[in-house]
Length: 115
Image 1 (cartoon, one colour):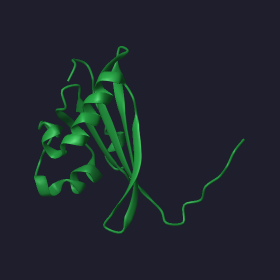
Image 2 (cartoon, helix red, strand yellow):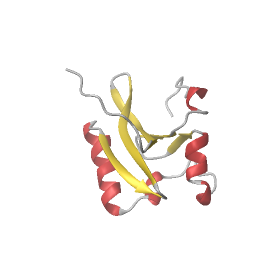
Image 3 (cartoon, one colour):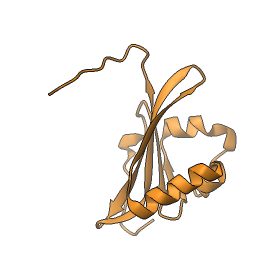
Image 4 (cartoon, rainbow, N blue to C red):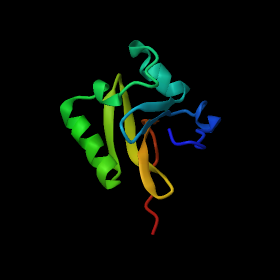
């Protein structure tokens, strides 16, 4: 991690999983929900996140790191629908890694069209 960068504790108790990696795919930070989600793997902070993803996902991650594009999609897992939002974070304007938010979507979540 670049010198002087501090990942704040504001993400720790959030009701979504927050995972942060550096430009090489090294896992730098996992909040409480993220650690619970991946507990079966043990403590994976400092590990290479590519080892936990299939080939097609590895290619997508590399593409985001190279281009700065964001990736968002929904999944169904264990009876819950989740929004996965993956986006680069930057340091001094340069891509420094990725942040992933995994948010459980309520079944009765309202949708509003605002114009």
